[in-house]
Image 1 (cartoon, rainbow, N blue to C red):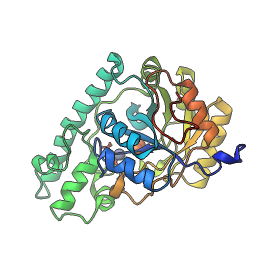
Image 2 (image 1 turned 180 degrees about the vertical axis):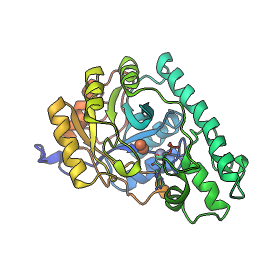
Image 3 (image 1 turned 120 degrees about the vertical axis):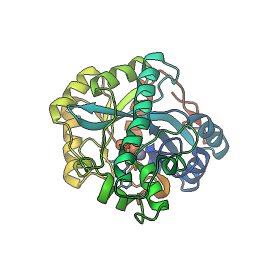
Length: 300
Ligand code: AMP
Ligand code: ZN
Ligand code: FE
Ligand code: FE
């Protein structure tokens, strides 16, 4: 992808990362500081089903002179298949969206208990061990269970925990409530947000939805597909980019950084500046935060 303005040619835009407000390993402030230190111009904070990290990240972004795109990653379910929709710059107080996220977060807690119940039949693990890995009001996920298994000496790291015990479809796996993706896309748009489907073809994670489901999400207002993602093969990137063109969607890219929880690096995959600008142009909920390089600060 060529970039028209030379000024933008070295702009690093990573629109999908996680902090301790969900299952990343860094505080929001640490994440923002690391992003600024690595020379990113724009960081998207997209914790699972929560905006709890936004306030701390905002303060850090003002300080570090990096542009913060406030977002979330909404867990969805379609025909038993788990998929994720990123929401950028929506109103965090929008009641219908908030109600749906709270329902999913509560179900995630119950589901973590059920997974631990199953694990506890074979391993010395209790739900309190998992809670010890969850920071404050963070959204509970399998990575916290993985961290508890590491702390208990059952596995060496998160990756081993997922590979051996926590993968989708494992005998220990339990699902949780999540909205249908078409509902999620509509809720995000109604809250002024910009919905982008995360890692649409990451088949290594589990079953993926068909292109028809993505077409119905596009009908409902989906803005883009995250084509470049560390879990996508080159063929999957190409398919995502082709489908985005076909459906008139944007094609973004991002690292899905989780701190020390995964081996990916910040800005391992990035979004081209024109795609970023197109996302901002559609946002109606909240504004950008931070910046300070003059050219892009205060947009949106
Ligand atoms: P959950 O939200 O509970 O369904 O857990 C899904 C999360 O686990 C996603 O955010 C993934 O990034 C993370 N995850 C999936 N596989 C792995 C893995 N092999 N190592 C570390 N984290 C993973
Ligand atoms: Zn995660
Ligand atoms: Fe995801
Ligand atoms: Fe993610």
